[in-house]
Image (cartoon, rainbow, N blue to C red; front, side, top):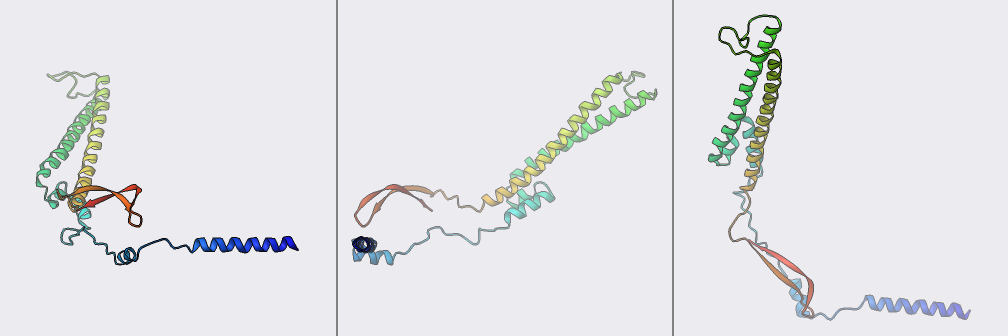
Length: 203
């Protein structure tokens, strides 16, 4: 019976201590409380609704997909248009050249195996190429043709991505006044430094 009363007293004492500790109010000045309650956070980043156009990247990508270089014109980067056309034109040129040479070698090989004259039979001033040379030429031109096609498609996709990314970047704030100001965090209650730092971006 005595042990039970002792246990009850210990439990009540422990709860009282924990309750008192939980209700301990730190020594905070009334002035700090008032200033904290009246604290107003002002956003220093001013977004201009006139310059921000969320659909611009999609439009630039669409225009570039319809006609290479048109997305760059939409972004007013006119100096990029000749670069895009030169890159695309080079890819198309090499594809067309390799495809023509492949077709010539294949046609000559078909005529050769049928024992008919061809442009590489060495007769009447023609260049002579053996059957093995014609087979090798077909493989080489086909490989170059496929590579030219792959490069052209890659350049086509690249100019679409470039137009879209550039349209997105044009809407970002790239003011020269951007700066980073690191500051040490201090506890306003006891005026002691806290381990850590605050990085502020000033626009």
